[in-house]
Length: 74
Image: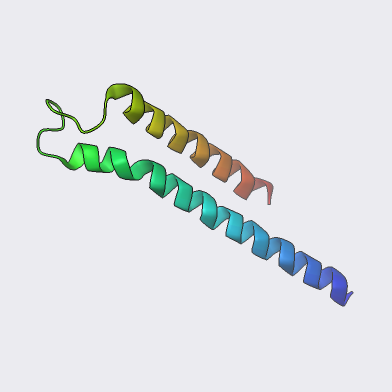
């Protein structure tokens, strides 16, 4: 029984670590768009082009959905 408990605790810990890693990835994907939109002239002279900006935001959205699905599945 102790082995089963240890295994469940290890799995729970690994799931928590995976969740935090996914959150870090989401934050990293959002850094450049956030900087882009924080500039005073972001609409007329953006730091990022439309394609990279949309690509980063799409990757963040996919990561968010994946993270949510993993969290719901246990």
